[in-house]
Amino acid sequence: MQLNLPQYDARLRRTASGAVQIYDELRRKYVALTPEEWVRQHFVHWLLSAKGYPASLTANEVGLRLNGTLRRCDTVVFGTDGCPAVVVEYKAPEVAVTQKVFDQIARYNLVMRARYLVVSNGVDHYCCRYDHATGRYAFMREVPSWQDIQSAD
Image (cartoon, rainbow, N blue to C red; front, side, top):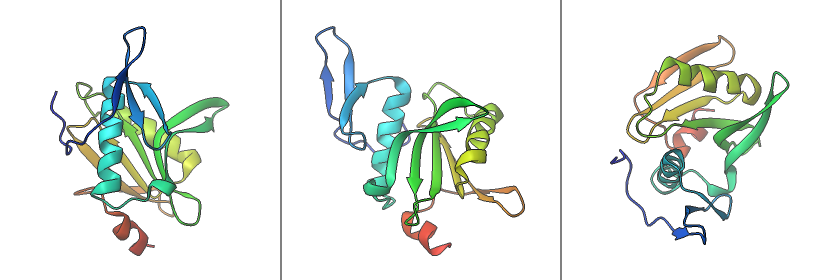
């Protein structure tokens, strides 16, 4: 399926067993190429190259403990203060972005306390700003640039 993200020169390789892997620049290693991983790598590349997000503040597969269970946020972008600023959840292109997906990222944000939440299946991208004082979400027309996030503080 064609993604609604710019193409980039992804580094792929095939293992001895025939599995295809993609290089994750943030984790600095090859990982299994799944449909969700294809979305993640394209989305992260877009955040870094087009939206100006710093690679040094961006991490994939960030662990968190929620109700005594270890979970993983797909991507977290940390602010210059070291606190999570953006949490991103990915789904495979054929998976619809539903309320259930937003509920998942909202639960993660109970722990992460980021100001921005993003959900993408590579075709549809949704972003909202969370106001911790009021507990309200405001959906945005597009994913903000890193500069816009920094100037919103």
